[in-house]
Image (cartoon, rainbow, N blue to C red; front, side, top):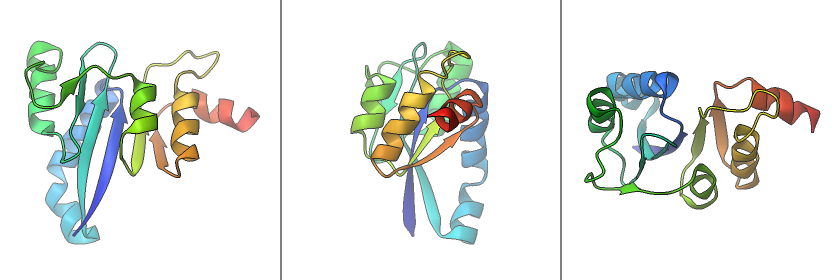
Length: 137
């Protein structure tokens, strides 16, 4: 079984729904595509940050956010890291860019995406601003 490592930047409604979907479809993804999907980092401004190269417990992360509004700072892998530090330094295959952004500049999403591309990583985003901004550059 191959492992696909994801880095989530942002953990608002869209990212939480995505994490819930990953949990729900874990067996189906493995059976149909031969991949184990592992989230190795979740970086937020307001909820805290989790990093674990062996994979984050998404059920616990979601439960903490739903009940406490943030990650448990006693949880293994809880850390203080910026989104750019994570994009530049963590080991991942796909960057999932779901941060809040400035609608006029597309930042910080554009810089996150450029950083991931410069490292040869794949990117998924639900933000339209960075796509428009990247096409102008």
